[in-house]
Amino acid sequence: MNRVCLALPTNRACSATITALHAEAAYAARNFGADVQMLILDSADDRTRAAHAGTVAALPPEPGVSVHHLDEERQRARLRRIIRRSGLPGPDRLLDLMLPPAVSYGACTNRAFLLAAALGCHSVHRRDSDSTYQAHAGQPVFPVHHELPWLGRPAAEASAAVTRADLGPVPAHRPVSLAGASFIGALSVDIAEIRRLDDGVYHDVVGLWAPGDWPEDRRRALVEESFTGAGTDPFTGDHSTLTVVDPMRVDMCNVAFDRAVYERVPLPPATDTIGSDYFLLHLVHDAGLPGILHNRHIENFHTPERRTDTGFPAYQRRFVKFLLSMLYFHHVYDRMAAEGPAGLLDPGHRVRPDRIVRLLRESTALDRAENVWRLDRVDTAYRKLGGRYTAFADRLATEREDLLDQAARDMEDFAFLAEAWPALIEAARA
Image 1 (cartoon, rainbow, N blue to C red):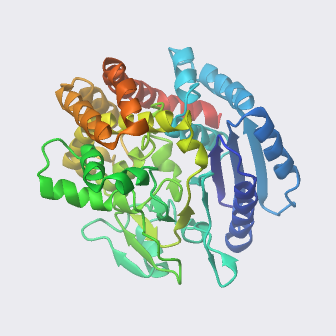
Image 2: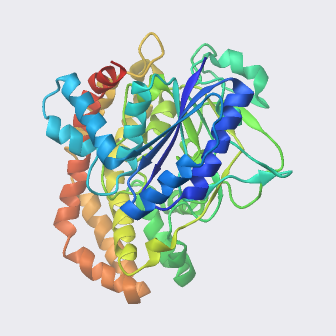
């Protein structure tokens, strides 16, 4: 039986999402015979977590579905055991990178990967607590419909099950390593207010995540596409393509990876950095590994906390850290694309962790001048908006050196974790 992990990391109230996720787990078990390990990694406050526990307790038993609801204390205990069993140096640093005190989109997913290995799962299917399933003909539109059962199997076997096959020169005997779609609704990054206030400022700021040497026309095209997902059109019927999936077409609220990907390379554990969980999408693409791109998009929404007096500066800081991280990630992405499958895959078509570690370490020596330029542009843009954006720019001005240091240190931490990752996975399996 195919054992899979349906994972929901959360730090906010999401009882409705938990109930809906359980329905998707039951769908996977009934329709595909999967053994579904539903994993809720709960970093919410005590009161919210207690409400989640009540929701989990009220879920009806479903054959083939096991529910694991772990608060941070229980997650930490399991991580300590795994790290201790691995015998790796720097156990305290590893624990802090796996379960940091601040928000980390990559770290919460890495915990799902590691615990999925401990549970003996063959794939991880990730969802988010600030999104929901579409409905069609009175039924929820579950992405798992396209994620099972092809992950890990040769692409040639999946070709008859999809609407279209477009692998190009990619050998059909390589395994399907990813299945995913995007979202409809609100922008994936909560910055629509900037566009409403000043479209020119929006283009200036969003364009900063492009490489610094891109021409303006290419930068503007990226801005128009950024954070928009699949637009707003609702689901009307299934369409799927077997291809090497473009990372811009998939969102991490709606993705599944085969174990041969996430058990070999983790996600960046950077804290307070939007987009830090997208690395594996680029790796799968540049390694020429087949995937299934489908149209069961999830509906995205934003929680009001991001617009409160405390939530606004925290969220904007995460966005700025995302912009600074791109100096390093663009370097790594360019090198991965240059290496291609010949350099990134071993003879068994599995990703080579040592190559990724080398590229990550190489990036840490980059000149920071481009990031100084980014901070200057953000400062100018936000001051044009006035109000709380000016107040945020004032705050940002006092943190410039710290932010530059953090962006570089985040890559050093990623390289450290990536080097340790295979041993952590082996310890988790044991």
